Image (cartoon, rainbow, N blue to C red; front, side, top):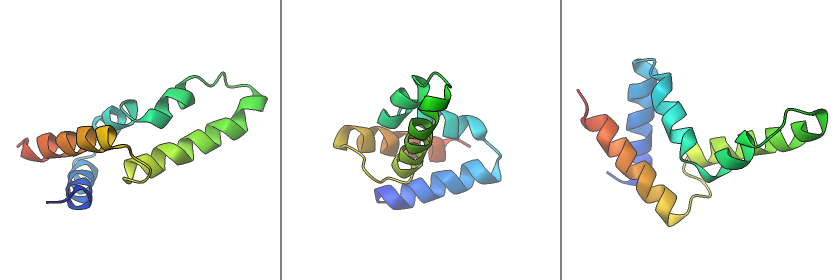
Length: 84
């Protein structure tokens, strides 16, 4: 399976099993999550928080990923799909 097929299959499995932990684990490994976690919650940071959240979603969907991130996520998808 290619990256997109693996992502879709893993997301479908996690959705069907209501496995929020799977998605949270993925988010923790994304580049954009580091800047999102650094937000202080002030009104001045809200615009950045929204932008960072959008970037996290884009990365979860396989957009704007570096080769290292893509390889890591692909391995996570394969491991997740191999679990009974």
